[in-house]
Length: 358
Image (cartoon, rainbow, N blue to C red; front, side):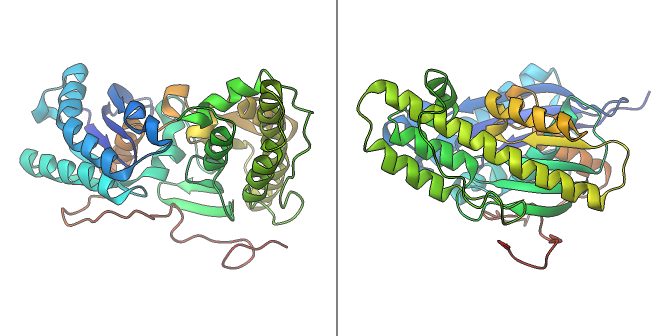
């Protein structure tokens, strides 16, 4: 019986200290042996956002404890670990450094390969932890720092169809929540706020809705929320504004996703069209339902990560590490952090380089 490879993954790109162990399997769906996440919500709550220095200090204090807990829960002996994978970017540089240095030390001590992972690739491939996902597929990556439509042709092979020209969708949610007085982390809580309101109360702008191809823009919407909030007279109107914001986002993504479907079909002549939605904002049930609807209407199968795998976690990092381990794509211990590491370094734009709005 062949021994199955086991990868330990580490994630410290922002305010989650996370360690997981993932094992290879015969059915192409890796087995999660443990997935430990320590959040820092309470640390940053009073500041209304993540403070990098405090986040890094917390990572330093917890990383060893979280790693030991993950190994203990996995029932894996430390000498059975085949390799160490760790997020190297993008993210907050001082936070990335904590995980990367810990991972390098561990890989060196165990004399196993070290593998640097693009955090966004973890999100992009995260559904592979619970479903057999075949390439190519269309990806909508929506998180606090990124909003992109990409074609995923394989491990490390991405073609960007569109991106945000200003704010990421998760950032728009967080800023709107802050304007409405929803406590940090407000973005994930805004949808519950919206359920108590009238989504047709306020008419909000949908920037570049019918131009710019698959590109997105949320800055104008955020400005409109700020302006409208100054005219709110009571608590109910706060709920109404949240509901109107949620509805506007759903309608923007509906139109832009239809455009992405059209472009994907022009490039790929496959009989099965898969549409993956990943990243922290993929946990929003209203967005999920709207994207399921547009997928069904356009003959795409919509695929979402399990809710517990939408946010930052180490299982997705370990899983990409496992894919790279099998391909012998190792890194040396000199690998540096890359706080602005893109997913599509060799992006092939449909209309030349850069973001176009025609």
